[in-house]
Length: 354
Ligand code: FES
Image 1 (cartoon, rainbow, N blue to C red):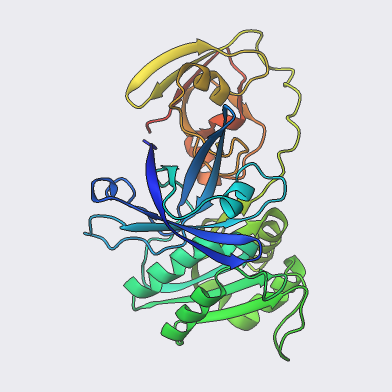
Image 2: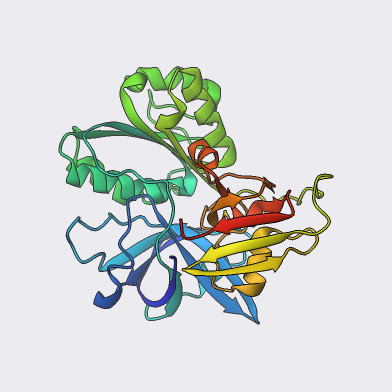
């Protein structure tokens, strides 16, 4: 069950003009709770003028070693979103010594270290979870190799430039690094311009044996991730080997209620071992219904992106507005995003504990 604790900021490192890395110290008594897999994220919570804001940020530091107490520190990357509700505050106001409310780690965009060839295609701040994935994998698994293809606008706007260069120095044989800059000339031979489906379809087979890659990790803006997935599917990569995480999806407008929506419906919920049942108000999502009655319900983005509100649909039917977080296997297994779900049947039963 996800929980918030107050953690102290132990370092603020400027990465680029518009991004920082925040490091939190984890006290010994909380280390087990903050144990994370490489690729997971943390939700940060801020209450200002009575309004609560939550945002998720990927952990870039390596995952703690198995058998250890858990991480002593957690580092996340934050890029400025103009007009955003959290990142301007993170970039301009957060200082060493501040205490922030930090949720325990969540997310299923993970790679548990194992031998084999892996690859990632990332854009912009999409490097953040992949940095944790690559550093953990190469340190723990001597028989693993990684091909990292990253796309940025310019060198100056590239997050974690030094950290990635250090990894390349430490593992020159096992880390293949390809950098594509869309707005800057590079040395001859290196690709420039945008990484879209067509370019990736041509580029990937020249870089590595596409069919031998055990796991592809796609992370970044929606367009890049979509194009990369289409390119990989076109090259015959099975869907189960492709993992994706999307950043910054516009809020969009909520679709009108479906004609099939029942006039009255009830949601029954199991959450942290306790059960409750409440009427769903017109047009609201199941998460909104649950939060009115159980403020401890898990969520972060409310936009169908982070997957924190995942729940198992025990009975009844729901309609999801959108889903950028759950893999097809998860929806087939019966999981839904509560923040995107509306009841289609008069009674719906959700289990947040499964
Ligand atoms: S809260 Fe992020 S997907 Fe629902």
